Image 1 (cartoon, helix red, strand yellow):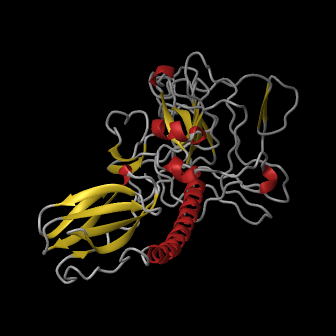
Image 2 (cartoon, helix red, strand yellow):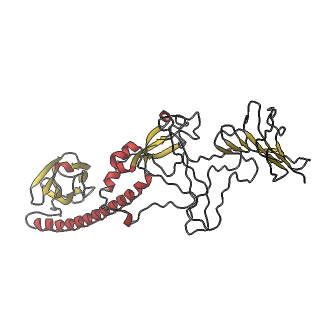
Image 3 (tube, rainbow, N blue to C red):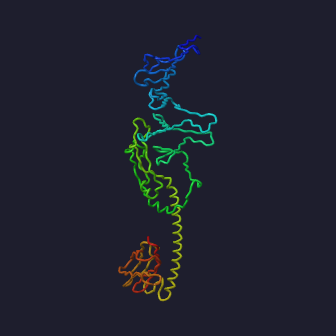
Length: 427
């Protein structure tokens, strides 16, 4: 094999050049394989490096061909494209093949603290554009399923398919932000270990606080905010953040939604973002548990009070019988009036806290009345009865103090019957 040396005194190959080599000195490349640096045999299989010199497209950039296809383009501004000759980002990969992976990074061996891909944005241009990012990915087209970001991890003692964290104390910091529904096929776990907590106290008055929360149905303004965020469509059930904040302020936080990425030369500026109150619905779960426990305790107390009232009722009935055993007919008819003609019935409801009804039958006799007495025998209310037949009167609890009373039905000054009624604490 003969060799040729140019501007050098030694030869290390078929061609050795000690200076520049100019390809397409007349600038005739128009974005094709002509006027390029070619590789291979004379029958040319399409391996080329060229530079388009005409206007438009990848002008003054570099194009790398294999098998007569432009595989990689480096633009004059430094942008790199794989599968595209006009990348508008620093690195852009377009793959139109089926069942393919655009970019794959594999770390082999026994690595420690290695990162396959890392992205950092060190200058966010705070005063100009609000949105910036280290890595942004997207998926589009007519595929059955598009995946913008996918993560898989396996084989190690601990595996994270996707891992994100933030530093700093800015109120809008989020390890993950999702502009749309989030679906999980497994469970969600958050930190709740006692060793992570301090200032632990019992939560009180849960039921009373829950009563202050108003549950509403509503529709989100999806059309009004469609350029800023993807709000749920259809009728919703939930709370208003302002109402919840007045009861549980620690379950409400103000957040700012960034303008839709990617952010390019036409990026939306700070004024296009929107701030709103967000709600920690999971934080209401412990409150609901505490409220159920409060209700259970209240029911137990009520049952105990009812049992005590039953006992007191029985004791008072015995007491009334003893009181009326001398000088009155007690709970029995005097016999001067036909028992089957004039009757007094037990009031309902009994016990009561607001209002009760006393039913009676006045059929025979000239005059009748009902007296309500305290347990010491003092008349606290006198009610004249004029109309005959099956009648009723209403008794309001606010006319009396809480306690136990007797009421008696008299016809022509003869007692027909006596009953006991109980007034509980007025609500």
